Image (cartoon, rainbow, N blue to C red; front, side, top):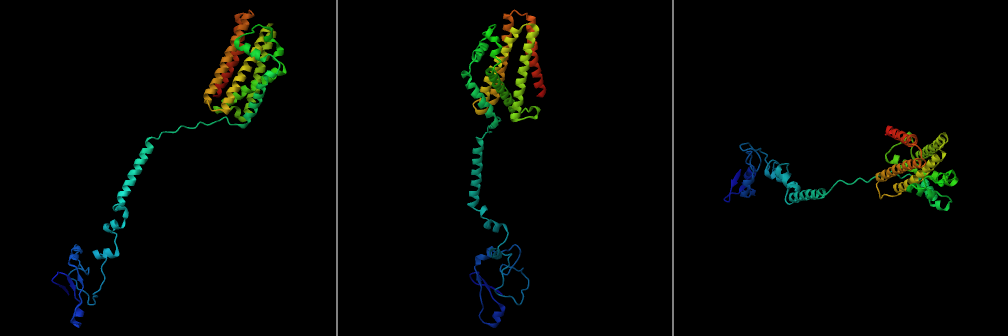
Length: 341
């Protein structure tokens, strides 16, 4: 039975021990513990059984504390929210405060970092990195550096072409000045420089004619350049013999060679800048090269015009020769290139 003493403490008394012995055993619990017991489910605060139920005759005074009671929760543990709160440190102070501060700090740092970020500049590729280009560049440099050691009037003829001098002079139409080994060597290096520039232009624009790449494409361009110029010179001499104006067409053929010598040297410098430097954008250098080719072409036409005027040739023949020798080949080349692109 349960006996309350004067201090309102709960006393356990075992009935069996009471009958066998005059003394009784007490289990005293503090009175304030009663406020923490579970009264919601109507269970006995100590035994955890519903009131009014009979207790077994073999009731043990020591007993076990049910896990459903508050004491059982403390001893055995539970998944109830209070236990989760006290078991998980991440939701308790100061851990939750530090976690929130760390998240806020990370978000602020990300904002500070990304606020001043901007899109990077794409590093331009360098398409002119073929090793074989070094060979024609070195050979051309050696030939150009040795021009002053060779006899001839090549430098003087180039100056005369640029300044429009020597028109009608005998030296400007001497065949020997343009058909010797010295002139042939300069012609070869000029054609090579022109072909190298054309190769770099096709490589930059990713244009692959005939499916050929690399050194094979350069050799093809060199062969086509030399062949077309040779055919042009042959046509000039044939027209001179047919029309009886060998002097005029001989001087005009000399002007053609001079124009290619100048163009080859200038394009060689541009090609070296394209391959071995990065001071200027490749597109700008390529456009500069094409502009120089156009200027030299116009200078050659104007020189032909002066030659015909000085020789007293009719304007009608002048227009006819210009169309046959200059305009028609240029239109054919432009038409071919536009069809390819």
